[in-house]
Length: 397
Ligand SMILES: Cc1ncc(COP(=O)(O)O)c(C=O)c1O
Image (cartoon, rainbow, N blue to C red; front, side, top):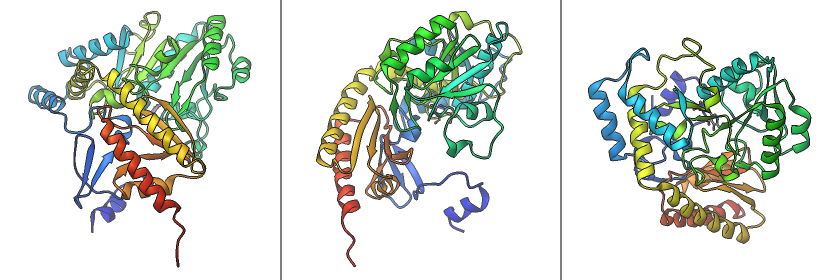
């Protein structure tokens, strides 16, 4: 049996894998077993902020493995506490609950907001249409994509959706029984959709009126991805809680729920917990990653390279108006909306040596490592041209 046959024999077929058997990865490139090299504009789905094989992250992992790999959360672990301190300092939130993944950070936020809302009989939770918040039953109840929801009903009660950027729907939906509104300020899976200023302004003025919580899902858009530590900073907004994951473990499983001071005592001893959440090796990798990103002042780099990427993509759009209909997003979270389905195009781009993703049917989503350079953007553009030529060439019999 070859590797692909073995995969389909032994693993539940929940992933439609790309036709690449990975040998290793280094910097911003992935190398296949066939020695083919792929420029990574996918970033392990926004995880590999520092690219692959970062020396400092690897050393931190090895050092921690030498000390201990797992310890129950019943113990004080210096590395976990230092990681939490750094995350709190960088984020401006005073406390965090650590998880293994993004979806678990969302679950923690659901539980905390339900518990917080209990005394005033606030039970209603909302998310936006087209959102993605994860796949456990709680987070899936917030997720609004039929593709992910179908067949898993019934969902958690009192969770509903507000039309994306639909201000009048927002006004009609929330009230005194609302506990929280979950929001991706830039939707990732949904097609790199940027929430409007008008919607955010109205959300925060309704929050003022009714007193509900706003919970920012920064699992994909957070940790400098958009040119700020969090995407909501572009709006001058201050959510009550923030979920993070993906890059914060430096490639190892780690997530977190950051909470504002008025919520730090809602969940006391025993109210919530996890065996592996905040694993010390993940925290060591995460601490090294956060140190590296902040010491390198990656925020300026992301703004500069992200600006260059957008400008080059807008030129590409101007050249091919019948193919590209929109270029949107911020920093290094960019969506290129195509007139029609982009799955085949992205497959061809992969054969041409660039890894990107196709999301929501017709959006080419770019989430490269934050350390990519302008030269890599130039490679991407020339590959897009090459793929475009092949893609649109009439087939000859
Ligand atoms: C915005 C957002 N929320 C939640 C999740 C779920 O995170 P995880 O896959 O780590 O459970 C994702 C994953 O893609 C995401 O993009």
